[in-house]
Structure formats: C-alpha cells, structure tokens
Length: 128
Image: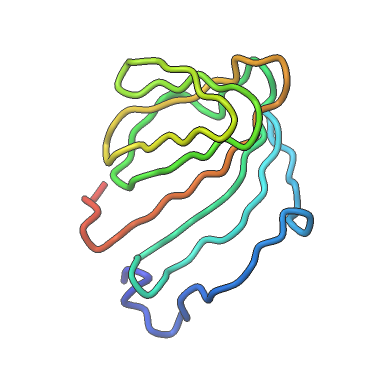
C-alpha cells in the first residue's frame, strides 16, 4: 500500500531541521545527512538529504528514476549532466531532474561540494 494511503503512519509535520543537529554519516565519496523521509498530506513520499561530495568524485553513475528530484548546491562546484548535456553548477544554483531523465553529478572543484537533495513521489508519479 502506498504510504499516502496507509493511515496508520502519520504524515510529516511542520518542523525545523537544524543542520548542526543532523548526524553526518561518512560515505565512500564524502558524507550524508538525512533530514526526513516520509509521506505528507499531498505526497506519497517526500525525502530530503544533504550530500557532501569530495573533489573528483561522483555520488553514483548517471541514472534515471520515475520520481522528480531537486538539487540545491550549498557550496562547491559540480558538473551536472542531464540527458548527455553537461553544465557547470555553482553555489546557490538549483538543478531539477524531471521524471525519467538521465542525470548525474561530479565534483569538478578542488574542495568538497555540499548539496541538498529533495525527491518526491506523488499520486501521478509514473511506476518504475
């Protein structure tokens, strides 16, 4: 049963997520901080995390998925590829990845790049 139809799981409530209180978990390419992952009153699932990507690293190979994704770059420089077209992304920039578009990221800078990722699944999200 999709989360939005499971009435025993309460939807995410309004709150503040303090960066300083989040656990930074080391990864093979940097670190990850999880903000939230759950249903809302209007979405089947809404997830947010922050990735810190070391210089010269990619979080994973280019890929695609049916849900949409928004990436907000906090610091650093990324090369972002969407459907084979690469563009440079600097601090404060936002990348939007539409449903099923192939996308990938690579830290082209000489310092870590930190970005927030928001992904959501709505009732109209195509099936995988």
